[in-house]
Image 1 (spheres, rainbow, N blue to C red):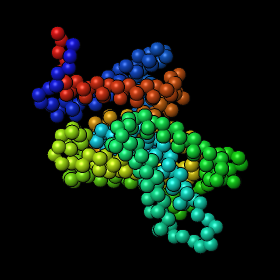
Image 2 (image 1 turned 90 degrees about the vertical axis):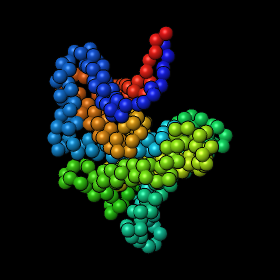
Image 3 (image 1 turned 180 degrees about the horizontal axis):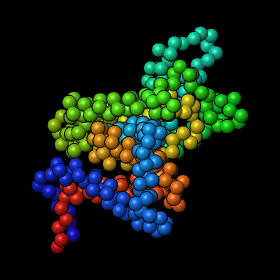
Image 4 (image 1 turned 120 degrees about the horizontal axis):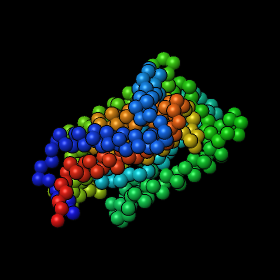
Length: 353
């Protein structure tokens, strides 16, 4: 058996491959639901109802989708240039800490700083923190050939240990009664609510605007063309005059900045402070979302809402039937594998010998 590249890839096949992969995933996870002794139709109905069946369900899904959308964009733009950024989780925490450092720890200076200055400074600091965290692995890859998958993955653990030390040290909130959390963000720096009496905030508009902006950058700018060229064939791009190192560095700064903004927006829109469990794996889930979207920035919006709806719906579903919430993780992980196989078969045909 061997794989043979198709002479022409059908656009229809590329569009419907993720849809077919999701349907295949639901069929596979139905076996696990039956194994748990529960009716498949009722379980899936409860999952959909919990994620999308009411205004409250939609608000929780969209709230969960905001950081997923940003980390998905971070992974999508990096993977487009074959920079496999696995460190969005650490970059998210770095951005969150930078946001708190600017927006929550500036007291005692003897003068008041306007929120009109603090808010953009806070967001800029978060973007810079995430970008700088990815810059090192990108330069090591470009100059020394060091595998960025290893370096970015290991940086996640280093950052989390650093966060733990800071939350028990200089950034610890003295009014938290010993609980390891940072000082709170100023109230006037928090993002407003999109829907009254829900948790969904204007960070959703930020994430959607960044999705459109990233699509426009990749589609209509010289840098976007260079990113796509380097991702398609780095040697051919270099032969054509594209500065591969410069492009990889630019992609690293952009990808890290998006993940850092995810941390800042999560703090400003939902938590108001940093804790070690602030992210339940948003950085890693962003990789799944980017792959489900086919690395397309506009597709990331839909994929993030789908994944968020599955995660939120599973919480609601597990309270009604005896199916663990871990079924959501199975759905997300199986979706990733299925999409990879479906996209592979859309571009290659299997030849038997």
